[in-house]
Length: 102
Image (cartoon, rainbow, N blue to C red; front, side, top):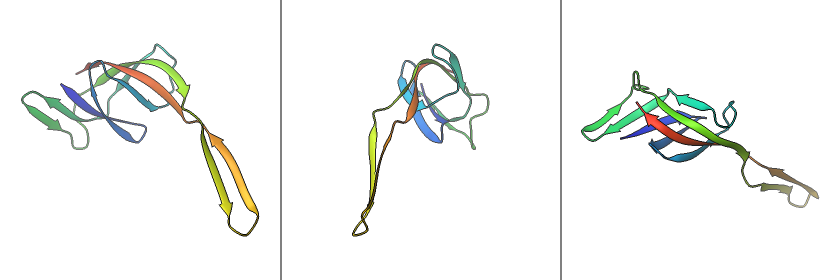
């Protein structure tokens, strides 16, 4: 059984036991989080597609840690104008383990 959930403006295909990296959630580590925006449920006898979400479907997971991704460098410049800027950015994330699909 698998599900397609929506969180942080993105969609993820998950199964039980999967570990996913999602946009940072406002919970602490080792907290249980429920994803109620289930877009699709896949079963062995077919798939159930929601309009826009599946009624009564819920995916639960446990937040393993909150962290930041590797730093990326953002460099912008304007040619022939002697104008340049160098910035760094680290995107925050939450590492979630999917415990059950129901």
